[in-house]
Length: 510
Image (tube, rainbow, N blue to C red):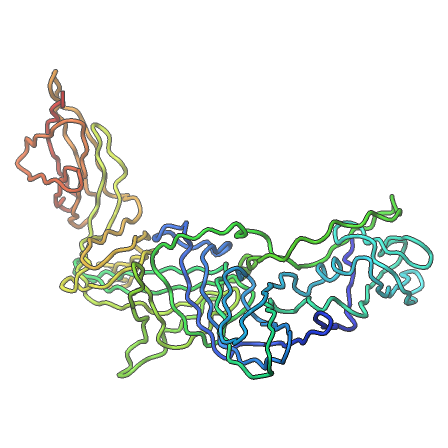
């Protein structure tokens, strides 16, 4: 199999007969509002290989509208544009028709659209290294062998010791090098118009990322929050007014997830059958195609910009119905196939309780997990809406030559949390805290159970057991038990390299 070289000699661009053509190569200004992927949990990380969120893009463009019927082409729109969502305002006569040019100029789409049309074959004889050109007609689709018809009859390109290039004297006018949205207008007089183009586009996403740095006292922490914006679209939006929308918006679209058009062309050499093939089926109507999967993940951090008194620039929160809007106060570039981070908040000395927790059910104990807990209140150091996202926790080394250095303590996730709510960050499974349950006694009406916990760490730790049982619990030990969220809670401080135990009786409900 060899790749067939394709060369376009000249591109012609012509609208329908008797109709003017106006091309807007780019926007005067643009704003991008990115919505989180609707089926992704707020504390789940983005899949950078397949972004399933979307963006609302609003562009301002200045266009010279001719008198009469005309086609206005907006080049450089997002490749994942939903054409049914596009709205154009600023035309006195309105919009008669709109189309998304989904077929971009590429070797594959160019070959497919030239079926049955004349091209030029530039043929290099590999044995003699001589080159000649002859006219030919494409008689096959872009998959498989490249069958062409020449004056000598039907043959397969790139076969029989020849290396062929296809040269196109002309190409379909509606193949564009950039994603293009076109509209049909009918104006009584020629005029210059400032148009507003708004549309939804697939292939974007965003998430919050939190970095928690525990202080040496073990009771407070510095919290940095970032908004990470990601785009897998092939177009960039320079100096855009950018915002991220938190909350779930119910939206469904059947075209989401299809492969993009265009791409490379690879044809096989097959000499088994040179008869003319049947004509291909008519092409399907244009439809929106999402941007390709992200091929690179450049991260551009914009928090170095500072405001008055050298304060870092952070996103500004606004209300949007039941949703939250986080606006970036300075223009940023939402680049193609890239990520960008902007600061959400920086909080110091946030009250943070570090503890270990396990779920206990009857005579079984779940895994012991490390976790952090605080309240989203100003008096505790927070007091702002917290959009969900991954959390990375660091804590200082408390002894040895590296004392004070920060080491990774764990990673977890934070669901969306409003002001005033409890914030719990569940990290990884504990390796030095162990818990088990043993049955001490039982009779016809009850069972007596002991919950044992050991701490192998050289420092005291707080342990919390969430106990669930089908019967009534009666604490036999003197330790206090409380009820929270339908569970019986036992909370205890276990001394360094020490143990603790809770004995309780479960009375059968019947």
